[in-house]
Length: 167
Image (cartoon, rainbow, N blue to C red):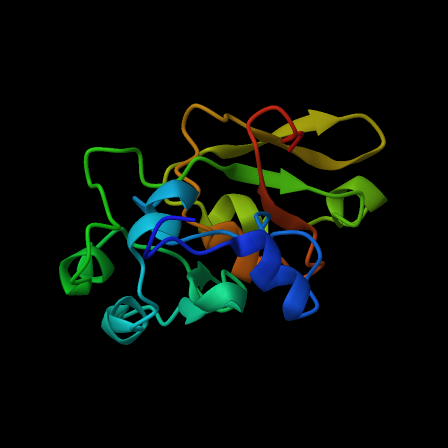
């Protein structure tokens, strides 16, 4: 193996993680390959985030926790990083939101908190007979900021790919 290159498979095995963790949300403008190649785990991006949504996750890489707040795309995480991990030429996130069947509106309870919180207006509500309006996601407008996730009282919203989103 080349010097300076980690064998993440062996490292995962020895630490009890048998599969690499790739389902977590990484900071904006980062991709798995850049993190694996350049991230030192210094935590500068964690300290710089004014929204306090970046934390150090498993494998010493930063990850996003949308349960408390949203990403405002301020760029302070990218500015604070001393390594070439962030690429502001890329789209900030590759995900959109996805809603589960736990959604209050899906269960017949009136709720539009996700639509009210969405700064891009990507979540709209379509009327239905005999029940509350159902949320509908315009994936092209969704920035993946996570504003809807923290406000959902049913905890029914998570990040997903544009193919899996059915909000």
